[in-house]
Length: 255
Image (cartoon, rainbow, N blue to C red; front, side, top):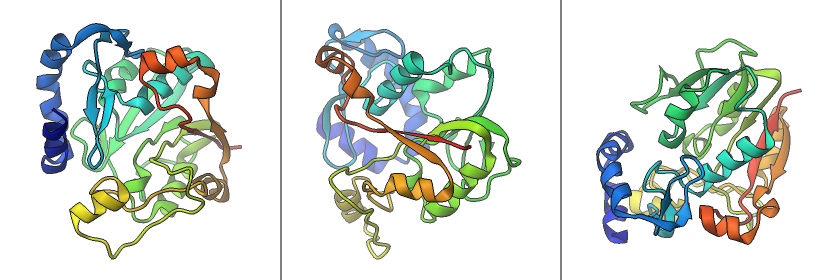
């Protein structure tokens, strides 16, 4: 199964993968039903989660029901337990909307919810993150998760995120990050897809972010909190929800 998942991820374009996943998800979820691990997003439990990864495959990380990964489940728990996201009235902008969140966020009566992406077939507004069609100071909450590593001019993208966020608003800008690396690495001369997947972790990534990612956001103007939410959870919960211990949630605010 690991080999099959790796082949599918690397050969099938992401928009087609999104459409295909809607068809196979119910079958896989039924087959893997059990009690070992629980997806907190929908509360369903399974004997195991699925493997995932464009390069090195991670075992037991992809929820069979919502298709959430470790970062999605961590963010859900944080939003539910530590914020008023599910109750406060906010205008929300969500980049490259994840399937595990889309319907649930759309169903919330307390938020005015807009999704955007340049290529995703499930986004409301087709837009370039470096040239957004939204007015200044428009959104109370912005989710931009695992997007910036795909953007050649991430500085411009960050500036646009800052521009459209309301003063007093907040956002979560998760990225794949090597916390052992002090500075971000990028090399435009690496164009071969297999080589990019080997070096950057995925064929369509353009950099590996280091610890300096947080300071780059600060230079744009954001106030940044590096939230290690797993530090507040028990080992039993980390195992139950299949989380990545020590993963940081970049929580940004605009004063």
